[in-house]
Image (cartoon, rainbow, N blue to C red):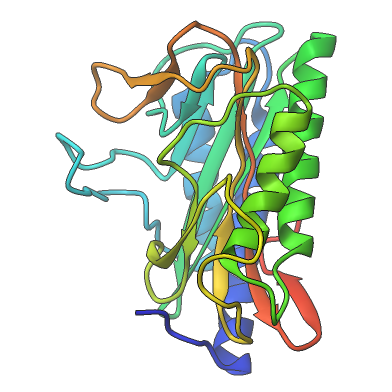
Length: 255
């Protein structure tokens, strides 16, 4: 069931989204060579604490997970696509890092992710991240009243495939509201004009995930959470929480 949010509710989700935006900005600023992923998690925790927000990630345990998630961010390095658990791994020069974060504030949630290179970047990584961000922008542009979920999926997938990148099947965006994950699912590939019609008041997390090699294969790491590319190629993940409104898409997690 898809809940349509009121303008007041969307404003409240924007407040939560701005906490997420600040946490991601702080984590990116702190992400330098030699810094551990656990230290980045602590940076994000402090932003949430200062805002009086809680984390929908911390303690989250969906049906596939062997253990509750132990952190407030997902930190996915290089060949990790999503759901990386922060550890004592120290960032190295040239690492490609994706950071995903959520916040709950006054009963409403928002969710966002960024990808960037630590230290000196490889041109190929810059192209991968730029394409992910462009796919996200195209998906957001399609999130208008009168379109359908398939239009968002097609917009994202077209950018990714045209650039020659892979898309991990079975993972994508989702509805957001009082919980981090709500209906509907928002795939990263699909057919235009298909799927659920978009209505004012729907709030969606749109989140492209790209695999550099062009292959789609991935596997679950032994920790039961992290998804890694099968061929060891690098991956990027970006995300915004977006409200569908009569005036057009409203990005609630804009930084």
